View 1 (cartoon, rainbow, N blue to C red):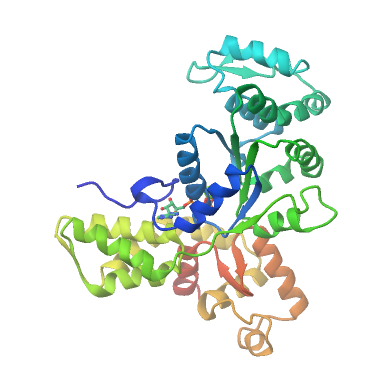
View 2: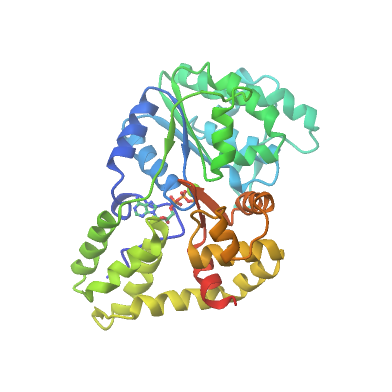
Length: 376
Ligand SMILES: Nc1ncnc2c1ncn2[C@@H]1O[C@H](COP(=O)(O)OP(=O)(O)OP(=O)(O)O)[C@@H](O)[C@H]1O
Ligand SMILES: [Mg+2]
């Protein structure tokens, strides 16, 4: 029997648990062509949620496009890929080329072959950055034109949307906003895990995306819900699981589905041949995962300045609540509140820490455990 737990990639179908309300809400918003901001901490399941929703919308005949902005080394490449994604519904490339010539007269793309020998639209080499600025609004306008021409709704997802800030972001925000808001039959999801960057985009009156649409925050999945899924899957393979094991997985994972799937996947591999999971097995699995990343954690740690090390060690041991209280600061010898605040912000910018309901936490729970157990 195949391992029923998957991590490290987007999950849908039987691997995607719970989230019924979120799926419904997002579907309703997108069917009415809203521009939704989907924000959560890392590994909470944003990409899987949108993949699930897109699958369902496609079945209803809606054209969907998904673009992960984390994958691009330059803005040209991003626009090029976006154009190709938008055009993939236009049939053969030659036909699509006619379509582009009609709709985007400035663009003049070439058809080239990618590494796998598949043809794609390229902007051609040597186009100056100013050249890109001339065509970008045409590309962002395209979904509206396609939906008009085809008489169909379109839904577009920009995953890790905050990455545009690395490419002259303020300017791009303005261009996207002005095109997107005119598209009555195109729904958008802008998602990402750099919560403060994204929240800033929609909540600051001076930013182009201010109040563009609903903000959806993806929360933890409750422990009891995940426990139910775990029990079901182990039971269906007749693996006899010691009661404490699954509770330990839930406790370690703190509501983050990625860690539940990761530990359950490993526990499954560990126990499937002996037909049972015994007390202590989850600890063994965690130790094994930590030892696999030991060198990476050491080098991550080695690159941190002392004030960050002190703070991270404190949070790994005592949690991230009330970090700025006198008691916490004295107990962990952290120095002045103003410098602690700066260090916290910097650790959040680097993606090492995150904050929820006033409490700071490690985004990487294994790194947290490593820091707690192996750093003096
Ligand atoms: N609803 C779910 N049911 C079961 N597992 C889930 C669910 N959502 C996410 N996961 C697990 O968490 C992992 C990470 O999910 P996903 O990549 O969707 O999260 P994300 O929020 O987009 O993460 P990132 O911050 O890295 O972009 C998945 O590989 C899967 O193991
Ligand atoms: Mg994601």
